[in-house]
Image (tube, rainbow, N blue to C red):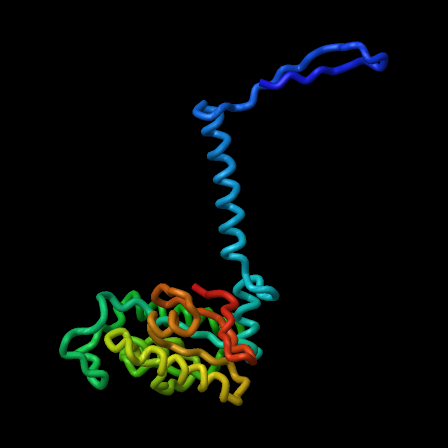
Length: 220
């Protein structure tokens, strides 16, 4: 409890205001801490998910891709299941986990989104896995080329660092300023960017001069 005395101009006490501060264990004390924690969590999330400087939203992300200032690296569209069957053969789609009808529709819709943003044609590279190649082709952004560093290493983690370095080398040595779209797997994207992705999600990033990859944002 706190008492605050108020004085008149002549210095004589005029009145006393009594206030009560929440005490530990009281209901008001618990409520106060809940409010403080909620505000702290809100501030933390705002800082964590703040876009990179200069990139405010999808329009800016698409502009960066269109102008060749950034590249798009996309996880293949929805392909139900986990990993691939034991008899997996990269050259035989019947032995692989493939896109569902929903996944195919998703890939087509993503391609339309790129075209609405002014990207009708791009340099498109894909993992050799059928679900990635089909995603890349259904985007409808131009000819699709296979790129070995985009192949999945989910079942061969010893290839992770080697393939990630090879992909960074490809990006660094690329001379074309055409929009670049890469279609690959969750593990490859995470190794390159440090970000996890949902099926069909596109990470927009750029390779800095010092060789680091800077994530600008994502497009759903």
